Image (cartoon, rainbow, N blue to C red):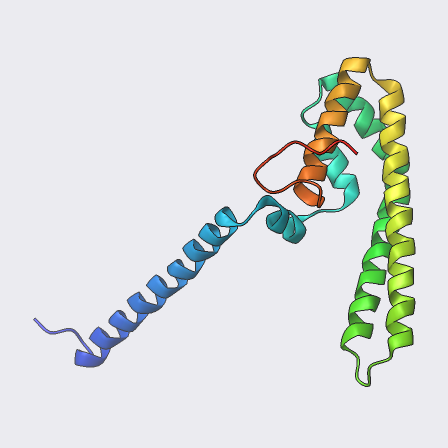
Length: 170
């Protein structure tokens, strides 16, 4: 029995199979690469907005603390969201200044200054929200928040290697 289209159809099926295997290899390779990277590298690529990180941190807390975190974000969410959008605009401006031709060092310096200002403003709002949450919860929950912050600092900060050593006392 022969297939309609003869040899061409057979070669087309072989090429299709090869492309599918190649695409699958790319996906599996990406997963392996992500799995083998230190947590800092994964976190740098996947780091979400600070407001969402507060919610992720709060997921491990008892329900009353989670409800408090949601309530705080309901009242502060718009302000934090705008600060995050301004931070993203400043990052884009710094990127644009860095790749612009002709290169303008003063423009890049100003973009970096704006980026630091916007990052500081966004972090200040998030820290205010966290302080408000700490005021509303019991000592045990504050301890859990402190541990979550320390884990987060270890993932994203430069104070701990990726193998999970404890933070040095400063």
